[in-house]
Structures are given as structure tokens and as C-alpha cells.
Image (cartoon, rainbow, N blue to C red):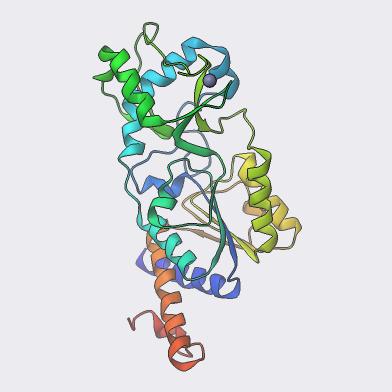
Length: 300
Ligand SMILES: [Zn+2]
């Protein structure tokens, strides 16, 4: 294991040196080290019931009652999550100038908390809530506090945390009181792109513009099973860009990949950052890349 992590880290560092303007796409795997559960197994298959669909959420009060009652319990996992070594390593790569853009499919804002600045939240952010009628916005925690006051019996429940701030809670949700928009009475929804929903066009275009400036794609911790993320890899492949993937499992883009490391994210990324730091230091000192790069990792 040790050896394969070091080897993958070495290869990843070399990939980054050869393609120093990366378009990075991340997924749930980056945040599982932060204690946020994910939906899919190593084969990219659902390991639990799929999340709520946009159409169902909008059409049915009982779906929203169930959603918000479970979120009162499960959102703690998102709120209390701490950044992982993978988030830190990706922020370090940006600070070193290797990241043109980081597009994340996660809605937890952990990349920003780790210090990444060139980030697009492709699927939105879970800490914001929007009115679907008048676009009024409020912070998620404020909405939760209000609903906890409105539903004291639900606020004290406990259950296993599930992905996306959900929880494995099953009970009668019909008495749960959902908070409506304080301005117009419309339906409030997390500012998150649900299944069956579309990524806003300007966000998709901003991600595409970053891809046009990049010289490679690095996918980290994502199975790329969701089309809104996969499409960029398909486009990158059509543009002739190399695509590398670091994740524990298979990806939908496996046949498009030029490099693939099926390995734990944090140690491999950390290893690669260490090597690249040494390489940059060697450049700073001698004006030339280190000729001893192969032994370089042990000289820190
Ligand atoms: Zn409203």
C-alpha cells in the first residue's frame, strides 16, 4: 500500500508538472474523509436510495416534510464537517499556481474553507436556501433554527447521518411544519441542483471557459456518474486534453482517461504536493529542475 501511494503520488506530481494549468473536478470522495457520507460504492452503483428528485420536491408537500424533518437531524454532518487533507492539498496546488479552475460537485463549501479560491460550486451550495418563486435567499442554519422551533418533537430526534445533509430517519412526517418563504409564502429549497434539475447556464459556461484555458483535466474523488460533471470530461477528450483520475473506484469516464490512480486521495495528493514543492524549491535555488527528482521525496 505504502509503495503504491508513493508511486501514485510521484506519477501525479509528474502529470501536474507536465500540465501545469489543471481543470480540476471533485466529487463526494474528497469529502468522505471529512465525515460526509456518499451515495455510491467503488463500482459507481447506488449504495442507498437515490436522493430526492427536483420534480417530487416541488410537487409534493409530503416529500418536503420528509426532506426537511430528516435534514434537521442530518445537516449536522455537513455543518460540523472539517476540511480533509485532500481539500488542503488541492488548495495548496492552487496556491502553487497549478489550478486554472476547480469545479466541485460537492455542495459542502469545504474547498473554500480549505483556502481554494478559483472554485465553481457546480451543483450549488447546501448552506443557502432560496425561494423558488421570488428568489428570496436565507442561510440554511437560520431556516433550520426556525423549523426546530416550529417542530420541537422532531428537533430532538437522532438518526444516522446520510449524504447531502440527509438522515436515515423513518417516522410519520405528516405533522411536520415546513417553513415557507417569509416574503411571498413560496416554496423554499436548498440552493442545490437536485437530480432532475439543471445546472444554471452561466455556471456551466464559466466552468467551460475554465476548461478552454486548461491543459489537462484532473478528476478527484468522483465517479463522474452524473452527466453534468461527466459532460466536461467528454468535451475535454474531444478537445484532445489528457484526463487523469484519482479515486477509489471506477468512473464513467474510464475509457477517456489518460491516467488513472485507484488509490486513497489524501495520501496521494499530499505526496504529490510534497514532491512539487521540492521541485519548485529546487527551481528557486538552482534555476533548474532537480536532476535527482527520483530520490527527491526523501529530502525534505
Ligand atoms: Zn418568496
